[in-house]
Image 1 (cartoon, rainbow, N blue to C red):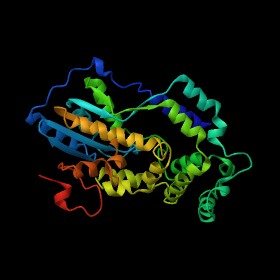
Image 2 (cartoon, one colour):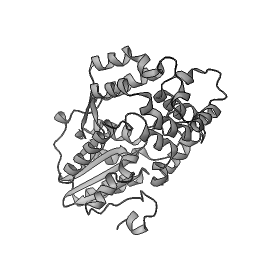
Image 3 (tube, rainbow, N blue to C red):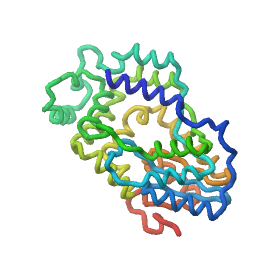
Length: 330
């Protein structure tokens, strides 16, 4: 099954393969003020949404990333790559400690993960209204296997096949660009935390279908927008319309679906980011962090947390109703 293969690939990537080895990288030195200004200007020129926070000789540049960027979407990744290469260190998303056993468990339990319990269908879990909406979306599909597919996989399929998310070949996203820059320039990379592979696999295998209802409901809303939903989201990202990206049907669905929708894993991921940023704010020099934009800009997220602690957060507005003074401080 393609989705099982995708999950296995995700777990392989969570081992951290391909990231530069911090032990072999240069020891970071604080950036001079002039160099800091150049780095910030160059990073902003890329067009990716980002925010800067400075405390003493520590500056944090937070880049809000999305995946599934269309290949023909015009932005300037080379500028972001150059800025990342001049940073003192990079904060990257979590890596996992997945073992071969974890991967094999996913393969062995493919039916449990990918299909409904025998004799059940989506109609056993969705309300009549959502089931009718799903029926309308899938009306043109000859294959009716979706009725007995796991709700998690139904959600993934709706986002990809109907809402255009990650459909076909995508262009580089901000995470790809920054990782490539760190590898080439030997900039130290510090993952914000680790996630145990067995915990991820357990959450997939043991979660009841009811745990994925919110994922499917959000994915139905995204699918109803049609295949242009992903492009609209990407164009909002490029135009720095951050609140619109976070409120987009696709981001709402991603926030509800595994792993970000898992009630045990998601808080762990968010707490690790908060702790890593705390450390970055006392580390001299320039730290560039790249994270899903919804993690940064959601209500009560990283940016709100920094403001609550009294930091001046310089960058585009990330929620509705912010004044120009709140959006960009001089």
